[in-house]
Length: 380
View 1 (cartoon, helix red, strand yellow):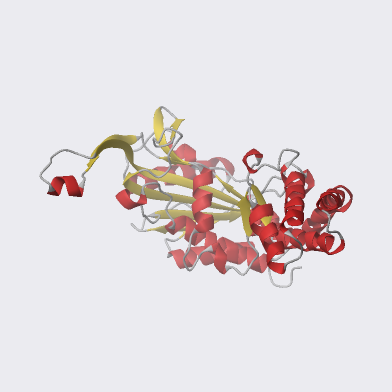
View 2 (cartoon, rainbow, N blue to C red):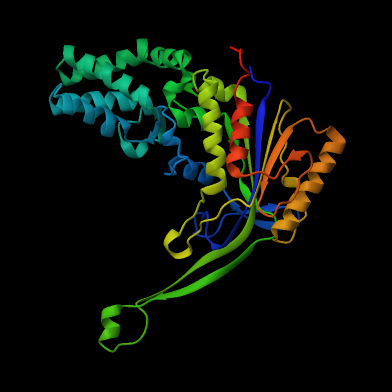
């Protein structure tokens, strides 16, 4: 196996006047840390945007089966595919769909509103569709079809999903391999996340304000009327965020079907995505697009440790000051625990970091991370 047990990715990214991640009341998410309240971006938000990004470094360009997270897989994928083949009449297919949903999503899963979104790999969806088609080829009675599907899950289906996962964990799809999944109806089909993402937070105290705005009705204004068609307010925040991501290298390779070459390409893409893909609500009115201005990557065998405590005492929201605080904390950690990790970093201001060969470009940094994942030549 590769000598690197973990890849740690640290980044500093700055956004002015944006609403990157909203809570249930429409306000910016927050996090108390140290002696100040910070603006926060959830790990779920970050992962979602990295997953669905569409550019040269998107996950879709990795030539690996994807995952689908939905409550509607039985109807929208399996049932639709069966109808396209003309395998049976609608009533019989509905019975198949209902039985699959009940077994995948639990006893109340026949109703879509009672389901939780489930992550399934494209190979698994294809497998379930094929097995359902085999049942329909032998049975054409709706009640009998439902019982046959139930019997499959009780006697064979769960074991088959487990066998698919055991044969190649990538059968659960790329997203499951990277970020994990939980199948409440079948714990043996669960996948542990190989990529761990912390909630991003500002290195300084929150900087927010309420943005008051109006909507003007073009037609009434043209008729000579004054006043607004609507009055609204929203919250905007500015911030310099610390982002922290950990890659469990052996688990990533295992989750990707024991393919270290694919794992290396995944990490290379991930580094680009973290550096360049922005989360954000209210895209049309805030244009919340920014690139990381500092990114540090560490490769080593020791248990990871965040560098978030460099900002436990809030610092001024200036990149040079934030990088200096992170470097000071890194030197203190090295003095106490040793600096065993290999490091490279990117810094648009050219600042140095303890123990790092750099600064380097994003392409060089991503290749460093990719090479740290791959096995040495000759290793099996």
